[in-house]
Length: 165
Image (cartoon, rainbow, N blue to C red; front, top):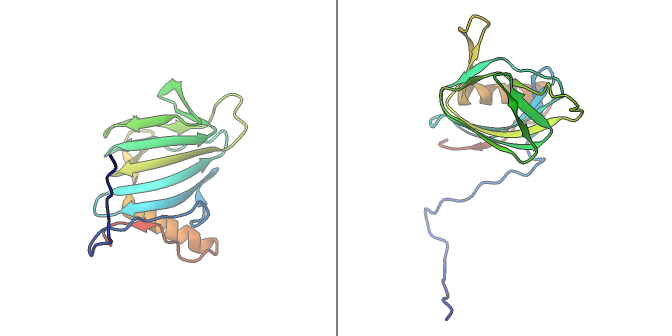
C-alpha cells in the first residue's frame, strides 16, 4: 500500500535558512584563533560559531551560564581541568550550564589546526587568575565582534542566520 501526501506551500510556514561553507568569512578572535559566526539569537541567548584554533593555543578560563554543544571536525583539544578527555575529529561534547574550564590545543603531536563547531546558550564569563569575571561574551557581543572584525578585514557586512530579527 502506498500513501501519497500532497504538501502545498502554505502562508506562514517558516522557511529554512542556509549558509554555505564559504558564505561567511573566518576572522580574528584571538592570537591563533579565528572564528565564523553562523547563527545568533540575541533574545534567546544563542550563538553558533565555527572556530579554528592553531596548535598550542590556550584560551582564557571561563564559566558558561548556559549549555554548550560542540562537534570537532579536525585536530584535537581538551580542557586543562580534564586532561584525559581529548576531543578529536567527529567527537561530540556537551557542557552543562555552570561548567568552568580552560580550552587548549596544547596536545602532544598535534600539528594541524583544530576546527570545532559550538552552539552556545547564554554567556561565557571570562575569568581572571583570581576567579573574578574580567569580561563577558554573549550573543550580542559576538555579533558586534564579528561585524567589527569583518569590517577590519575588508569583508562586506556578514549575514549570519539571525533569529528574532
